Length: 229
Picture 1 (tube, helix red, strand yellow):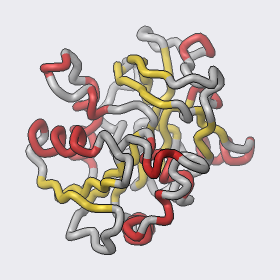
Picture 2 (picture 1 turned 120 degrees about the vertical axis):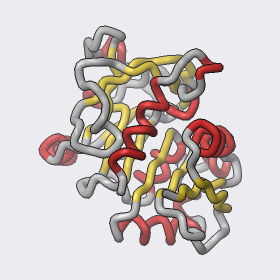
Picture 3 (picture 1 turned 60 degrees about the vertical axis):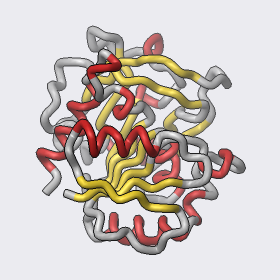
C-alpha cells in the first residue's frame, strides 16, 4: 500500500506521520503538497495535524478549499482510504467527508497531554484488531477538539457503528471526568458510513516508537494495514 501525506501551510505533524509510516511500518510514502492536483498513485491519504492556514476562520475551513482536497474527496467517494488526525479530522468534517464538527474545547484552552482511548466499535479497519475491553494511551494537542453533532446525526453514527474511539479512564471508565474537551458522548474519533474515511483528534503517530516509551498508536496503524485492502 502506498500512503500519501498531505502538507498544508501550517501543518506540523506531517513529517512525524511520514516517519512512522516509512520507518516504523516500512510503507511507501508520497509527500503531497496542498496545491497538488494529483494524488500520485497513493492508495491511502493522510491529513496530518497542525494549524492549516493558521486556523483562521474555523480550523480546516480554508484547507478544505485547497486543490488537493478536490482529489481527496474524489478518492474518498470512490472508496479510497483517508485518515485525518487532529487538524486533519477538522478538515474532513469541514469538507463533508465526516459528520459533525469540531468546536472549541469547553475549557476554552489548548490541551496537550496523554489521554486514554477505548474502541467503541470494532467494525472499521482502524479498530478491527484492537481489544474493545482495553484502553490505549494516545496524546492529544488541540484547542478545537470538542466533537459536536445534532441528535439525529449522533443516532445515525451509532446505528452505523461509526464511532471508533471514546475518551476514557485507563480502566475503561467513560464519563465527563475523563472527557478532556467536552465532546458529545466523549467521542474522540469517527468514521464515515462506508468505513473508508477515519478521523480522530488524538495523535497515534506520537505513540508509535519505542523511543517514546509508547507503542499504543502503532497498534492502530497496524490494524489499518491489516484490514485495508
